[in-house]
Length: 242
Image 1 (cartoon, rainbow, N blue to C red):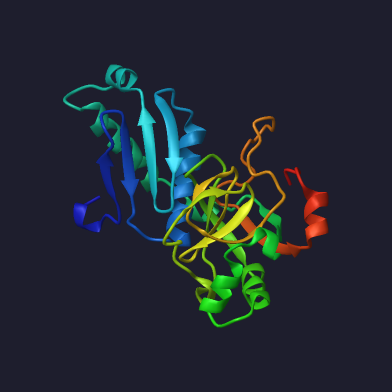
Image 2: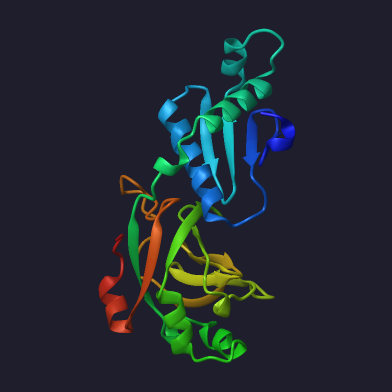
């Protein structure tokens, strides 16, 4: 494919990884293409691919440079061989056949006890907390990627009326299950960690459990629907994985 027609770039990450990048965008169609490429590469089960990491608009492959070197000829370098693999796989993709795997419904308690930033966000937007919750729960969100810590799902995009930048001063401790907003992204902290997102509620579900066959509750490509629960319901849900 001529260089001027490419909608992406491929660049090395050290000597054993390459990233295919469609740009710094949040775009469902591009993310679908990334995830279709991710699934296609996983299906190939190539022994020299050590890891495949999808993100919002990029995909990184980690490879065993020694194994690749043994398989190539001529003047190809391992990096060039991997670049050819990425481009050929991308060119043969049937993106439209790739479908999001699941709709996951996530209970969230939006009471003051679990929502330290909800009132401030509502005041900044000149609306009630009830309206913020209504806007947060009346649509589904696409899981674009997993990152930051295991099980942290980056989802988008919230209604622009409740979009809010990260806090100027991140918290040293954000409780596990906290549901936050950062810009037009929304996400859930799977563990108690430091964090700077605006916390508007908390789910009692466990987002990451090593004892499960799939430790991460949410997967890239999932659709998520939040729904509101009371504090009593929060306690009865506590510890569930789904």
